[in-house]
Length: 158
Image (cartoon, rainbow, N blue to C red):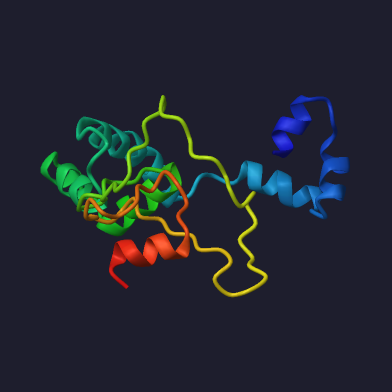
């Protein structure tokens, strides 16, 4: 960040003063060589991204680790996990997510009969139900309209 501001015409001293950082700390960090971990990470990042892209963006850290080891690279799973987290890469989660309702974009939307106010002043004044995810008998009203309490009770057999 300081380098970016420095390239933009600001001096190191004013930027460090605002960040409450000693300028000597900044210059010492600039001169210090990269750590072994950082060098190893820079070597592994292209390999991890390549293995993940080759899988169709489906592999998680365990499978990416196995692919790298099979390719002859010595790497630990925790390292791959950390790099994938830093890169924002995520494997596909097992199991299918159940999608219960698929709306038809061209279908008309039901009117909002309660004007988004879901508080009732007295009992049995307002009944709402979402019946879209339930298998319902033909006698049950369609979910496109809000039904009265009596209709709902009759349809459910109460």
